[in-house]
Image 1 (tube, rainbow over the protein chains, first blue to last red):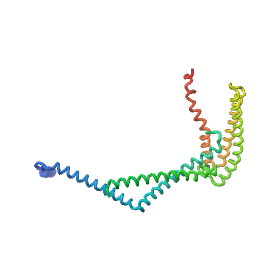
Image 2 (cartoon, rainbow over the protein chains, first blue to last red):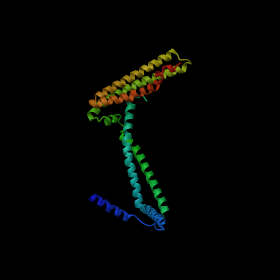
Image 3 (cartoon, chains in turn orange, red):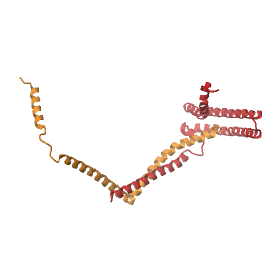
Image 4 (cartoon, rainbow over the protein chains, first blue to last red):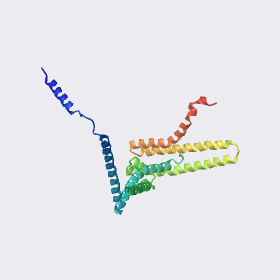
Length: 105
Length: 166
């Protein structure tokens, strides 16, 4: 008597046999694969060039370029303030030490 | 726009932006370090580092202002003794007994000056809240005595390997 599991396995084997590709590959299969790779590279390169052109066009506007440089200045100033606060502690400490221990380096 | 021209334009803009960023950071850091350090007050570091109240700070200011003239007086004595020693060394071609005496006197003055300085640190630490006072004293001992320890440590290998000497 056949069990249900054996029956399922038979059905699966049959399906796998049917799904297996038969026959040779088409004659221009390799060329087609390369063509698809090249097309995909061309699309990527095109997107990059498009982005570059758009970014340059954005900066071509005087107000945009001024805003970009102003943002760089602002961020630099904020960074400078943070650094200045840290350095000021060293300066203040050095001043106190110079006042109270003049003999030492 | 030609992609190559666009690339160069973007590169130039990026270089200018980076230059502006670093230049402004440098200028503002220099300006604000000087300004935040409160250059007119020697005690600014104590106030910030040890989170002193106005009352504590005023008490410490009195001690500080009392200590400074004494400190200057000792410095003047040390400078005079040093000048005397230099004159003695310049006057004779050999190391005279008087020069040796002056070296001892100079060392004694320096030691006395250091004792006064450590006494001042102890006084200031007592004028602070207990925790901060302990931290202040430890920090000042590290910063002042530590300078000598570095020199002594640098000399230590000669002491640790006595057999290396002839």
